Length: 82
Length: 309
Image (cartoon, rainbow over the protein chains, first blue to last red):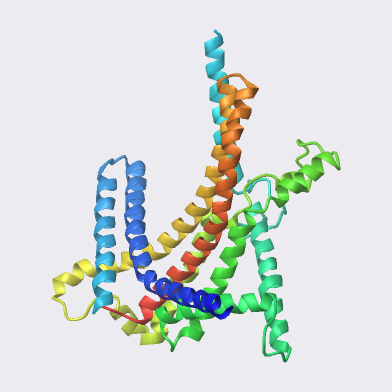
């Protein structure tokens, strides 16, 4: 009688473990995309505010951030499949 | 005239609310440290509140993890009981679900200790921000020991300045992310050798003009990973506290806006249940954020070991 719930619980935990281990690369790809856009846009903003060059720095930063972020996203998606 | 006065009063309450929120989540002032220590090599080693909280977290980690594990290892009991049983389950879950699938069976025992240290340290640092211990001490200090609030030399009064969550400080999370940054490099170099690790950063066999674009992007990626770890943890830990304080501030804002205590108390009917609900959510956030930092660190270390192009 008590075996069934405990078996279900351990099966649930095993499924949770499986999803957790599979979610890592996706989480890393999304955070790298977000991080690179944020980092380079902020860097561009900092350069703009220092050298009074707005909006060139922000735009260049955003471009570099997007390129780097999407490259790493693509690498996570297609790199994991090969 | 009265409208102007009301406008000024309203603005001042709004300013006070904003300042109070920032004051509650930020570190205490370095110019008024809790413990004065000398400046060495241009670095002021004086202890601010977040540094004190890091010491407290280290002490808790020592008492809750290191001492029980050492005691258990010294005893001849094969089956853990009580607290050690829970610890074993957590350690096993992180080792088998996070570290092993990412770094592989060969390196699991090398990197599991670092990842577990991250998890427990961040978990305790996040959780300590939910415990209103200094607020309680402040109340005891004020009403039992009759210490006035403006006595800035009193140690408990000094402790009331600044937030209690060290992981809400970007410097703390940056420190943790720097450890991950070097761990990624060490993992890659140990797995493939020094030169192969750097060569593995970019895919092999491409036309040379492609490398002109790819090499800078990969170098950028090296720094983006710890930056993402830094921002994510600190922003999430600060965000929850700001949300709770902002919702609680509705009472003061509404009372001031309508010049009525009853309106303020009516806002409490909404604010207090909402703040309680978000505090409950924060308990989950504390666990999830420690877990996500640990997961991402394991993934980044694993990416340096198992290179896919």
